[in-house]
Length: 187
Image 1 (cartoon, rainbow, N blue to C red):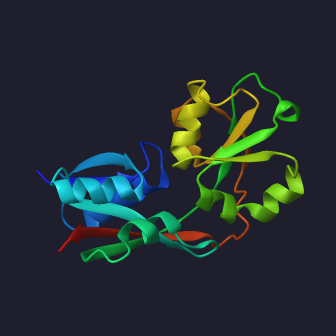
Image 2: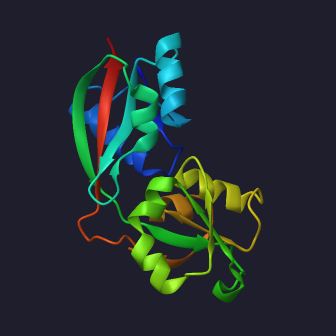
């Protein structure tokens, strides 16, 4: 059985894209392996631990996904297909917290770039705290790795997966916010 590593964890946008890409490639029985970031996928591909990778490569609002560009610069790979996923960001907090008590917000750098205007208009004083993945930020908040006064930006599925409370949805700056994900293997 083929193994397909994807950026993020369960509940991430990449997990959704990976499911679509393996279906489109005729590999419905492939095992999806959450790998959090591009560099982990590249390392696992080189070590033979996975057969394919699914990575976000570009976004219509924020441009190229910098972690993909950095990890795969100069790497020869074969593209097996692209999938364009509409991205709708939500803001979650820990249950029982009040929005007025939040002072920080955590997410992936791409999510911050896709929500700059909305956040500046609604929460201009919240300090940005970068994480390796949107769904991972949700996990970190739920498990207490992030302080309670932190909100996270992630998908509706990612926040629900960790039992968080949604306080805002569809906060992306562009209603046509989409990310292109690529299924690839090393040459």
